Image (cartoon, rainbow over all chains, first blue to last red; front, top):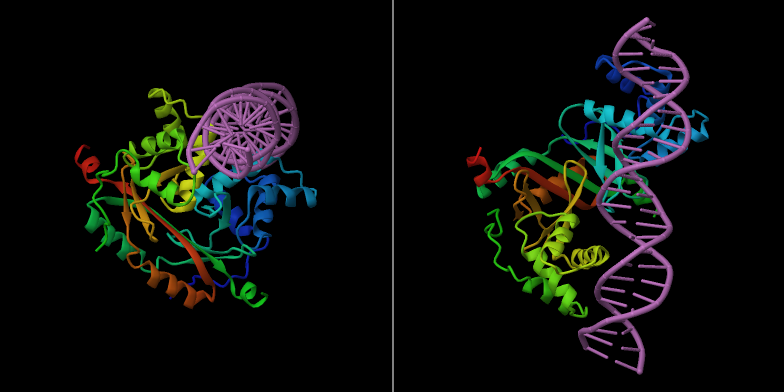
Length: 153
Length: 153
DNA sequence: TTATATGCAAACGCTTTGCATCACG
DNA sequence: CGTGATGCAAAGCGTTTGCATATAA
């Protein structure tokens, strides 16, 4: 009952991302389509620098600022989420669902899977009960090796 | 079974932090004692800028670099932990225990409590089972309002 | 005495902003 | 057409580093 999808990207053109932007009332530009494609072309967590490098490699000429701005939009829409790696760096993952969920990221290849809530709501309830705090948000991020990286070493 | 301590700081001089540094074989300097006192004087999560401001206010003259370096040491020893706030900023919390635990931070006053593992190991096991990943570290951070901030608004 | 620790300032790397230009709707 | 989007370069900020000096052990 845990994994919400298989790790394989089903939307390599970024149509879901484009649809998200569009239905939120944002203008659909060639640049945004390009950024969506860059994100969709990535398998797993990525950093802004990755997108910028990909953009250059593919001669898409997307400006750094635009990458940040588009990522900010998508994050706001829940189509993408920002993670904090154990190292302290920021990275992003495309989300399969807009519902509340968490991420499990491979520390070797960055491949990521969405996880359902699992038992977190019970944990949150217990934390509230024992501390008297009222929890209004929580972050859970798991890191480890994906199946294929386990095999290859 | 959840809270590991009461929110009230019991070590306002920073003796525990000093002891941690000392027993790890680090030299005990006046500057480190000062940083320990600054941290101990804080109730809850704090940022490096807070310590720097406190240092100036108290005329301790601790250099910015030294604050970062000492925090790095203490983090390595598990006496302090670095958190990633929802906003993306980094902050630190003094840890009551060196054992694995998590934090619950008040988003209004920054007061923080340590939490035991709660049910996380079961969640991790379930995530591993359903995804095939091998999890080797996880981060769980809860944010909300502490009892007194709930009352005062 | 010698390895460590510190202060200072410069360097860094990531992210944001200001502003003129461009183009979707 | 007009508002929103983009590129570019500069500014911002938090964090790290190099190096000369000071100090614990």
